[in-house]
Each structure stands twice: as structure tokens, then as C-alpha cells.
Length: 406
Image 1 (cartoon, rainbow, N blue to C red):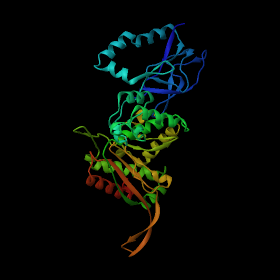
Image 2 (cartoon, rainbow, N blue to C red; image 1 turned 90 degrees about the vertical axis):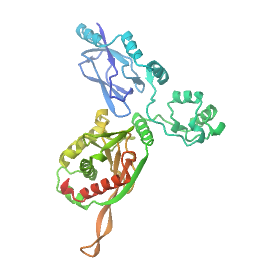
Image 3 (tube, rainbow, N blue to C red; image 1 turned 180 degrees about the vertical axis):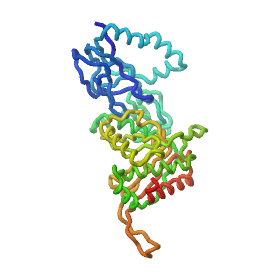
Image 4 (cartoon, helix red, strand yellow; image 1 turned 120 degrees about the vertical axis):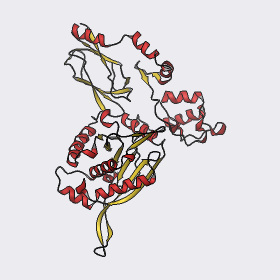
């Protein structure tokens, strides 16, 4: 019978490869069309590879824990003549693929530099995107070609060299310095970082290439806690903060913008992410149109996203875009923090743990106990100045202390 290849699908615009987590079928098994047969992990989530058509598994070439690029053949299905002919027409021949590659100026050169051959024989693209931050070592601004080649082999960035004291001219890190550092690592306990951990690290490294600033104040959470008792479903304080930030941004569209080069990109919708802890990393699903969605609907949607997030089933599309995010680090008992906004977002609002504290009440001429929390706003200083950020944070606090308006 003719065979149809099982291809690593395109899992998102910015995703070039994925790692095999599990293979749920064996050769000889009957499968239906669009049946999930392989689980793969990217730097954003765990997703499934499905069968292109019905048939019988002929063979699976993919190996668990190995990484394969988008478009790689993971196995084959014995299918009908009709299905085999249909998929043969959809797959461009190698000559056509080569022609498309050659049409892009510099593509061959970039591919040669960015790819390496792994033991499984697949061509795997080494991540080269992102803006590396300068290493702490004085000489790390210049690296010899030998050092750069070795870094590319190990998928290291300049930031990874921060702990190396260079012995070369001008304190430059030499190939000997790098090899000595790698040799010292061999005597320590190490393990491979998960895809999500590596993804978070890369995002934070790129975020830190921007001039970030943080301002903070305090907010009385008693109105939120009282309002919460009357609602069903009951939103958490972070959702109140998200809704307040969305309304404040809708009132001040100039703050809901990104600076790209010398152009200001105005956001057409107020889409805000909410950070969720997932195993050994953080994922930030986006709540779309948060300024036009009721608090009750946001709560329902958030609960769905949390379930998907904890199961690592949030797709890249659910995490892409957005102008801002909210991080409720108060759930860990932390009172103050300076969260870092994602590279494609302008700001992030941080909410600390609430605690009882005395506040002066003019009407009673006395101190009264309130539940107070620290609230911070970290932002890209290229897009927003201190005054604008201060007014935005003040408006968020006003809305939180009058939750009936949310």
C-alpha cells in the first residue's frame, strides 16, 4: 500500500522546532484521520501531532526526547491510493523547496550558519533570534570566531559568558577560558532545561534589552474582598487588577501603545495576559478585549485557561500579542516585586500580598485597620514616561477601591 508521511506541523509563527514527549501508537495500529498520535513540547506548550489521514501506522522514525524541525518526517502511514495521491499533490518536490529557498536573498547563508546536524539525522535550527544582553565580563563585547562557533554548537548566548573572567587582551574571553569553564561544569550536577524554562529565559533576556522602569504604591483591598463575596463565580484579586488595568488603558489609549523603531504602534484592542505558574516555568495566556468583557466572563475564561495551562495545553496563539500583563506574586506571600514585561508587551502590573495595616480615617479622627497591598507597574520607558505611568497606576488604584465600576 502507498504511504503518507507524518509531518511535524507548523505549531506557531515563531516556533521552528519541537521535542518529542511521547509516542502513543505503534507500527501496525489502525488510526483515524486527525487522531493525536504524538505529543511534542515547544518553548510555549505541549501540543499534539495528528494523523494526516486514516490508515495503518507503517513506522515511526521519531525518537522520544529528540528535537525535530518543522516539516520533518516523523513516520509513515499506510493509506489508500486516494489519500496518498491527495497528499502527494500538497507536498512540493525538493527542487521546488530549494527554488523557494534560493529566492530569498541570503537565505542559504543564514541557514548554513543557523543549523546543525544532530545524532538523529534531522536538521535542527539553532535559535538565533533575540537580542543578547552584554555579559558582565569586560572583554565579552568582542568574541573570536572560534569562541562564537563553540557557543553556537552549545547554543550559548553572550549572557551565559557573564560568569567567565576573560584572560585575553582587554579581559576578552578566549576559547581556553570557555573550555575551562565548560570543564568546571562537568564536575557539577547538571540537567537539560525544559523547553518552557528555556523559553522563559530567552523572553526575559530579550525583555531586559529595553530600558525598563518600575513605580509602586499601595491599594486598599477591602472593597475588592467585600465585592468578591457577592459574586458568583468569584474572581481573584488578580482578575480585579486586570479588569481595572484594561479600563484604565481604554481611557488612556496613548498608554496602550508600543514603540517599534521610530513609530508608535497603537493597540486596536485591550488584550492583557495573566501570568500562571506551570511546572518549572511561567505561561501568560491572553484575555482578549478585557475592557469590553465583564468581570464574570473574564473569570470563566480565566478558569478555562488555568486548566489548560496547568496541563500545558495552551497553544502559542493563546499567548501571543497583548499590550500588558498582570502578575499576582502576592499568592506566594510576597509583598513587593518588580516583574518584567514580556518582549512584545509594554507593561506588567504586579500585585503583592494583602496584610492588615492601620490607615488614618479623617471622618473618625482615628486609625482604622485595612487590608493593604503593594501594587507596582513595570513598563518600557521608551513607550511611557514616569508621569504617564503614575497617572495610569493611580487610575488602576481608584478603580480597585471602587469595584462597582468594574
